[in-house]
Length: 483
Image (cartoon, rainbow, N blue to C red; front, top):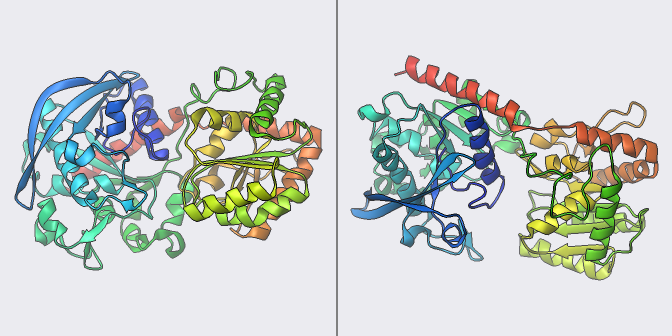
C-alpha cells in the first residue's frame, strides 16, 4: 500500500481510514501487507514508538539534484508501516499545504516520495505481488514500473492497482515536470500522461496501472460522466473494463457505541437508554436545552461546497422554524465558517458551530444526535454516514456516489430504509428531506424501526477486502497476459 495518509498515524480525510483499515483486513485474511507513507512532522511528534531502520538512500530528481531518504517503521495491528523521511520535504506543520494553499513544491515532494518508495521496497527485499497506489500523489509509480524499472527483474512480477478516492484532485503540473520526474518524453502524449499540455499524475495512474479501483460502485459509474468526471471521464471510458467500484468499510471495533469510552453511556440496538444519555450530554455540552423532544441533527464535515454547506446555510432557517437543534463540527472554507458562525449568532442555543478537529466531540455528535446531516453535492464513498448508522443515527443525504449506495430512503408504510435521501443538490430538496425526517421523528414507532434498520446496516471491511483480493488477482492476470 502506497499512500500519503494512514490511520492512526496521519489523517486528513477518508483516504487514511481506507489505507489503515483495509491493510489490517487483508492482513487478517493471511496476506502479507506493508504500507509506505511519508514521515510528516505530526507523525514524528506522535507517540508511535517508531523504529529507525539502517537505511540511507539517495533519490534523484531529474533536475540534477539528489535527496536523502531515511526510513522508520512502526506496526499497526501486525501490519508494518514504513515512513520515508526527508526533513526538507516533509517536516512541515501540515500535510498538503497551509492557509495559503497547497505547498508550492508538492510536485517535487511527491515525485521524491514515489521514487523513494520503489527504492525502499527493493532495499527491504520485499518483492510485492501488488503495489496498490492511492490518489494522484502515487500516480507515477505505475509509470515508473513500465519505463525506468521495466527491465528490473525485482519488479518483474509486480502488478499495480490505482485507487481513485476523489477524481477532482489531479496533480497537474507544467510539462517540464517530465524532466523532474525523470520520465521519458515518449510518454508525454494525450493517451498516456499529457493533459492539456501538462503532466497529470492522476491520468498517469489511470492509464498505466493494471487495474483501477474507486471507493463505491455508484462513484465508479458517476466518474464516467461529464458531470462528475472532472475532465477524466474520457480517460476512464478508455479503461472502464479495468475499473471496479468497491465500497469502503468502517472499523466497527473503533466505532462501537457499546464500548466507546468517549460517549456518555454505552448503548446498542437492544438497549437504547444510553443513547438518550448521550443526547442529554451533547445538549448540555453545546448549550442546547435538554429537551428529549427536540430534533437534534449532527454534522461532522469539512466546510466545503462539495459537502453541501451552501445548502445547509440556506436551509438552516427552515430547520429552526420547526425548533430543531443543529450541532456542526469541522473546519474548511472561511466563507462557510463565517456563515455558519453567523447562524449560530442568530440562533443561540439552537445552532452550535465548532471549527476545530475534535475527535471526542465527533464521537459525542454521532452518538447523541437524532439524525446526521450529510447533503454532499458529490461523495465518492463517505464514511460519516456509515459511522452515524453504527450509532443508530439515521443519515440525511443527497443520493450520490457512496451515499446512494449505502443510504436507502425510509418508508413509514413498509418500514424499509435506513435514512432520508433526496435526488438533487438543491435547497428545496434538503428542506423536503428534513420535513420528512422531522415528521418521522415524531412517530416513535416508525423512528424506532428506522433506528433498528441503521444498526442492522453493516459496512464491514471483511466483505470489501474479499473484493480487493479478487481485484488483485485480476491485476496479476492482466499483467501476465499483457507483457
